Image (cartoon, rainbow, N blue to C red):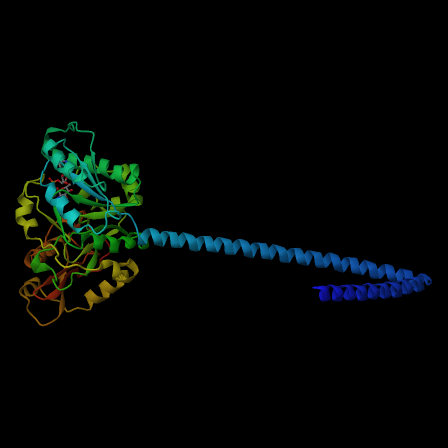
Length: 438
Ligand code: UD1
Ligand code: MN
């Protein structure tokens, strides 16, 4: 320490001496110059130049400072963007997806709730919210037996139980008016009042598959990543055993036909739909591309729900003809670990049409009989009539909504018959659905 101090004093002394010598010699120089008038002029010029140079340098450094400031601002904005992206990823990666159970007057809601509780992998990720219409007390007591023992299961009651005034011809559809009114209330409750980002809707007469929750969790990011998808559904409208590939439980499809029966949508979409929500037949309303801006849903090859509601608003006929034969998936597919990017519009559309139109053509009869050795075939149709004829032969549902056949995507209906993939596809350049069909 002492040594350093001495060194420092020595250095300082030398520096002061040096400064004295330099100043003295420059003073000498100046006094010499003063002696000469011409030299004064020269000195002034030099000074002026120096001044000019300094001013120039100052503007340069100001410019540099501005540049640095801008860079800083840019990188700040960039890192903000990165944070936003991460934030979004995190919300997608670990979302809260409430399950909304639509109940009315069936005490069998117990069967539905038992399964939801049984297969629910996380109470935090999937809170259960039961919305009860109809004011049926026995059903309310069943619901209460669940909410009383688990705070992540809650109930809300649709408050408007007034009769909906209807003209005589529409009285027989009263149930559908009540259902639409109830859905509007329940979706507003979950997505607006409670402010959830998305919701999974389950009707009180649905069974679910063991991987029901995993399916929705895995498919949920698609609702963020692909703006052409507005809903994820657990249902395949042609989900009978003879029409699906039981060896492909992981397979998913796009569809233009809203399947319903266990489905998910985002608040963002609900806020677009809500102002025009219909008085009745909301499911058919959602099948009109005008209401969903022509966007698609995702549906599984093998259904993740099964409807056991023989006694209901549609009075059992549909149940006996179709619903009872629907196959509920039994395997557990780890959807959250799968790459689902094949379902994004930019991948899916071109792949589907190039695949389908490269396939050999066959008749509905031959396809239904499993004739021919090809691993996949295409059955052509040219209008509503030929579509329905072929669909009937193949055992597919042959009805239309807003001109869309059930499960169709870009006019193509995909199914699996006698061990091979069959596509029912237009034999003309398809551009859009024709609402006069059906
Ligand atoms: C059919 C559809 C159903 C759709 C409904 C709307 C099938 C198998 N079912 O109903 O997905 O939502 O049309 O058009 O395609 N409910 C009320 N209030 C009522 C009556 C019923 O909230 O006054 C509830 C029920 O609890 C149930 C849902 O509405 O959750 C559907 O009722 P349901 O009796 O099952 O009618 P479906 O004929 O199946
Ligand atoms: Mn039902």
